[in-house]
Amino acid sequence: MSTKHILIVDDEPDICELLEITLGRMGLTSRSALNYNDALELIESQHFDLCLTDMKLPDGNGIELVEYCQQVRPELPIAVITAHGNMESAVSALKAGAFDFVSKPLDINILRNLVSSAIKLPAASKPDTQRASAEAEAPSQKMLGESPAIKSLIQKINKLSRSQAPVFIHGESGSGKELAARMIHDEGPRKDANFVPVNCGAIPADLMESEFFGHLKGSFSGATSDKQGLFQVANGGTLFLDEVAELPLHMQVKLLRAIQEKAIRAIGAQQESAVDVRILSASHRDLAEMVEKAQFRQDLFYRINVIELEIPSLRTRITDIPLLAKALIKKLCDKLSIAEPRLTAGALDALLSYSYPGNIRELENILERAIALAENNSIQREDLNLSQVDKAAAPQPAADSDKTAASSLEQLEKQAITEALEKARWNKTAAAKILGITLRQLRYRMDKMQIE
Image 1: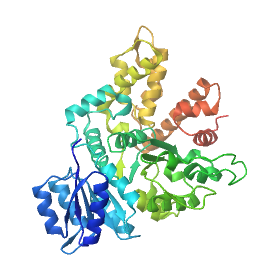
Image 2: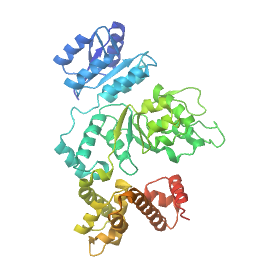
Image 3: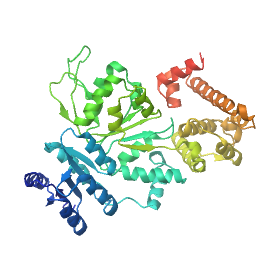
């Protein structure tokens, strides 16, 4: 591998010298610029693999340099050096497109981690044709689709993978939020480290601190040995906080500190330990609305929602259904080691007419059931069991349309839950897994729909 070249931009010669020494010990070469204009001249005339810039410069600032490079050198990652505790500047830099930030006084270990991640970035992103080919080869790990919504989403994911900014992924249940998070991880510099997903709604409140930060032996009753927390397991990689809206308020405070300080303290430990973790989070709920109702901390929302990624619902990308159905049928049949049944025109028409309240997860469940019912190696319309949808699609009086649609969706949801319970022989844990929801969510829905 050729030697990597780093540009340092800071008006303090002592800082430049410290960074040059640190980078030199990492086997990297560096050049220094003492102001904004000198930095521009170097960027325009030489190749660099990373730029480290102070936020305040005599003739400009770090954010202006980030914005400039976004226009003329988008492939160059820029990390901004901020004053200690100035999270507002750090977040502004990340929103502008900075790769990451580091605070003064400089922590050499944090700096080394940042530089190591940045120089692992690929030189350029794949062309769309190559990306489409890669998606076809590994549909379970890629967003499949040719609709404008998916093409735009993949483009955003590709850009976000080249940053360390926290991303909040918003979308309906079953739309592919975790898949988007995995793609951000897999296409970025942390791809060789762990991707650790955690459903925040599935962890009991009294165990959350131990689960996230770990504990030492004897730190509480039942702590018979040391245990690593999720932050330690994800160290060097990515921690994906699914259903982050379910975190209780006391845990939101601890999570905020861990994110801001890039350090955690295990239960029973006397000192904090540094962690290098990229935070991605997701929810189907409206966090901004929860902040207004004091159900979610505004400061944590501000920190994890540096960049928001919206996942489109399946009903807004109906043209992708034929491709998705084909890929899902292949995936399900490969798992069962059986021949792939043909999807008849009538069955495809029914799939295209459905509204998918459960999105792609529901489409997969529909096809899994249809494969089990299919005869003569073909999936017929009736194998999909979507007859209720056909009835709901019949013309309704305008005044009753909303009420009818809501009733239809509730009937479909109740039917799906009942079928999953029957398939799992009324084992709620297994049924929840089939439906792709948490046990707590299943119990809530059963109670709401009076399913005994």
